Image 1 (cartoon, rainbow over the protein chains, first blue to last red):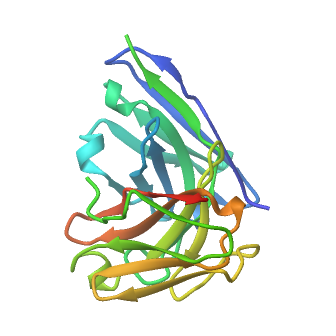
Image 2: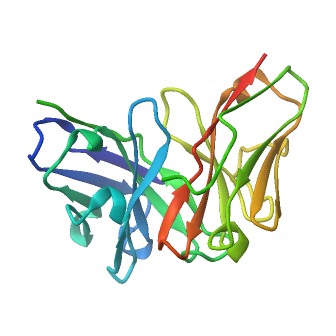
Length: 123
Length: 111
């Protein structure tokens, strides 16, 4: 049974930083590409970042703008999202999601989602 | 930023059928990139519903099916049930933007 549990969310002021964590069980993170997806209150889903098995990363440049870094610790089977210079627009629930299939190839999909962690950026 | 366009809402009575469209372009759906669909029930995490050529995770009933034509894809739900009331999102990869993109989401109301 795959389980992804996010943590690290909270209330921060604009300009501050947060590091989100996603602990995985029932799977070995280093064997899968992993994403962070976010959902602002009352809004739709927005893809944020992707980490491949070979540690190559991709970002939604429009929303990240060089402020976020995705990484993982194999020894802890944990995925991270370091978020710097946060703004009110980053307020959202952040989901850790497993990727299946090669990016852009038919059959590519996101098959396992965590329950999310809420990040609120407010002064 | 949605370059996948979905209708904001659809509705149907129990037992009826509805279709949710997802209009893309030649750099995403039209380029042959995978399209998948997600169900977002209020208060829970989004769930993979269906992907590719009608591949469904275990537990997803056959009432849900997908089709694709050119630069668009559609999710069809037959035999509507009250528990189908949710938001539905399509997802594809866009090779010109080098990002995954979700549609704006469609709220399904079961009357």
